Image 1 (cartoon, protein in one colour):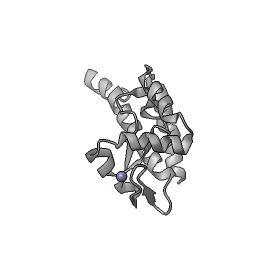
Image 2 (spheres, rainbow, N blue to C red; image 1 turned 90 degrees about the vertical axis):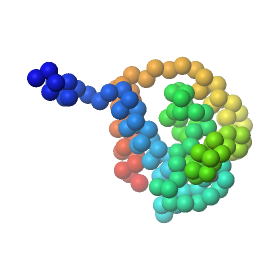
Image 3 (cartoon, helix red, strand yellow; image 1 turned 60 degrees about the horizontal axis):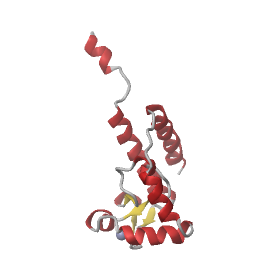
Image 4 (tube, helix red, strand yellow; image 1 turned 180 degrees about the horizontal axis):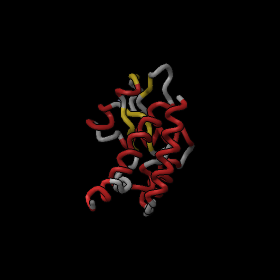
Length: 135
Ligand SMILES: [Zn+2]
């Protein structure tokens, strides 16, 4: 009985984060896609959005910028994984896309600490799910 009660409990924190990461990644890759094709932010390689990744300028370990729409851009696996994110080029391109100082602001933001409540993350899941479904 106790076991059943436990199973019915809401998602654990790590599952919520995982779910949000997945839907947010889809959103980042879809929003700049044209006919399913997206472009790597740091090398310009084009591929189907499903074959590309959601690259983070400041690492995912920093929660203030983990789901920041400027901090996250489409990247190919070559840049994101094998070239460790190409952070220098990433920063230069961020300043070009959003204005000078953007990469510095993101760096500072990433070092601030934040504690999202579960419901805030769940709200983001709903928000990005809706956006993904609208493409
Ligand atoms: Zn690339």
